[in-house]
Length: 383
Image 1 (cartoon, helix red, strand yellow):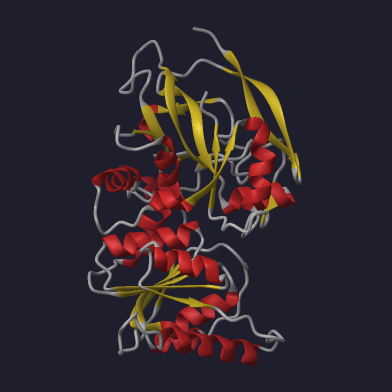
Image 2 (cartoon, rainbow, N blue to C red; image 1 turned 30 degrees about the horizontal axis):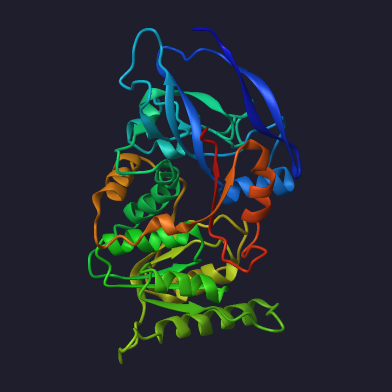
């Protein structure tokens, strides 16, 4: 077996996606070669696409995007592998050093030597999965059971973010959970909370259609469409007053047919990265509760820290995931009646590398040209 040419979607500048041909060598002794067939578009991919950077991280060479992926094993090394040709796998694309203290503790997601596909943080960049084939270490390729589709396999990555956040929260059965942001990750945090035994899950978003989607499809028990003030508050005092008022609106919500207000949340998943949402989270979370910081938005924020301190509310960082892929796959395959139909999150599909620019254009919208809600866009590269 010799190396082969593969086509790849490559970002050369802001909004400049081209299909390039590159040489792919034979898989190394610890690798398998995977034909990538389903890739979801993530918010970080969108940042790179629109700005050729993601926050402070600049792209320094042409970069293939994509990391929410699944595919089919098409080649294994001559020495053999635990996987075989034809196996369908979900790809865990972060490759840690596996030698540092963090890796040994099982916290490989924050390994300083992490190489993560489609991220420009390391240089040379680790090329993403929006290409026909990749070579990937077999240990990070997780076999899918027959009951799951490759699209399910692509959802394992964002589902893993939600599961890692749940683990960081130490979510207890019977808790009240608040989710700020009803995008794909927020909806998955809500779904994981349901499975974990949350008594009540509340979701809030500025888009009424997303809130309604969450409630109608069993991701949340109640929802709040966040009012956007006019004019928007500018002083710190006015911003905090708005956040306090929003927190009171959340706490005053009642379940359908119920008479008792939901009250404060034991766990709040903040999935927007917006300053006012972090402020609201502090005011809406009960004493001794936890706020999971998942959304990556404003890097510097003004927060009512004393309000958190006086209630001993913990602000807990969440970055990607660790040790979640097998559990996520097992959950998707389990038929657990508490799990909402997460496959409904895939609202739009585009076929082939040539349609990747159109896929990104759609993923950047909250609604498509027909007025339909956009939640998760998947690129289908199956033959």
